[in-house]
Length: 639
Image (cartoon, rainbow, N blue to C red; front, side, top):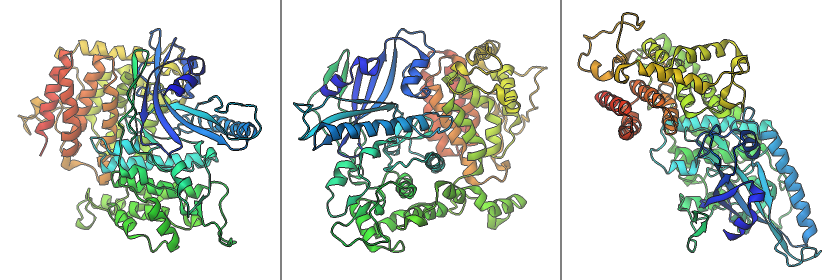
């Protein structure tokens, strides 16, 4: 820790380190990861974004960019390792110069989140002093520490798989959809990752996927000998938990050794493709040359290992021994028994086939990520979907949530959910604005996922969030010029320089003041549909004038699309933790209330009920009262 504090000083970072902790597992013994909190002396949103390289999502920092505070604390992840040369300082400087040029090239290509929303490149790197007693010496071993800095994300995929609430099947499909898009985006930019694992696949609190550690492979070997695991251990093997000796203070904060997710899985996992290993001493075969540079097909093999680990809840796909056995067999049809057993655990037959194809021994037989995306999408099962729509009551095409033949990736991912969540990634929206955006898009998401046109819910949220916000979203659909630009503070539309989305949220505050105790009453001028009070007179009062929508009248959407509503629910959960206005919490409760009607019982009990229960401790009486009503209503719908 002491060397890091010395090298990452205030002049190098532009701020003071006020906290730091070790992150595990790591990517190879050569690299250590740290989470650091840097206190910037003054707020300058443009300089902060320039330092970080892209807009900061609300869950990646501790304060808002629009805060009027005198200091600003940001969270970064620091990857540190040693660059060593046995032939003096000159070759070391050459390697560092080449690495600097490569990192600058990657930052220029990948830094724009509007173009590459799933990539999180390194935005700053710092070279430490030489360890040699005589830096000018031309011969002898010399080494320098290198520190790579990027944004700190909510969690890695490895950590998320070990955290509660565990990911549902539809959330795993959603992550798969984003991973395929992310890798295709990286390859379209002419970049190979080289070592994709669940440790460098990052997730925000609303399950948006970002790939990190792009550029680290410049310092790692491409080809590895198969008779000596030493290089693999040094460069690629995950590192287990290490216990440090005591804590070190940094100002008023303490540097502590973290106790991150650990297991033998992280130490022995191997996601490298077999073609990166060679046998020294053998006569070279013209058809089997030792690779000298990374290829796109190598990333596809690593992605297959990541997806198997994702669907097996963290169980590794291959270790080094399994990979060597698979490589020696030389036949993809004769996979190791352990790998076959793990593939058989994947429920979806289409996903299982895609993962098996990604692990092909022949690199040329592997497809591009977009090809796998097409095979896994609902369009490949159009015949089943159309048949179900023609005759939804036909027994042989009955849609079941446990069917393994349905397409894992429904059409609503591409058409509705992805464009909506993309806005949360590329626009600087406050958590309050995110809740308002979700309320505006509620009707579109329900129609695309559940297959139901919820006119009552759309009218309810239209009234609750205010006509101005609703008009803004409606006009943005027809006039793209009114959409906010990336990096523009408070999402100001280009056509209205005086517009502020936060100011528009005040309209919701005023509307809530007009509602008695926070609950809407029906008046003569309300345009809400008439309610059938005779259908369930006992439940309707608990539903706060929101009628029960019969679940047996859902449209003939695939089961995967119907379950996709949990993705929208997670956005509400992550945003309501950071909202500043009481009205935003009220709208979030209503969203949870309405979404619960279309959710399965496990989502109601494991996601909605615990979160609503936590809001019962809110200091605002209106939130506590609304929480009790929502909690009673949700529990009454559990079968």
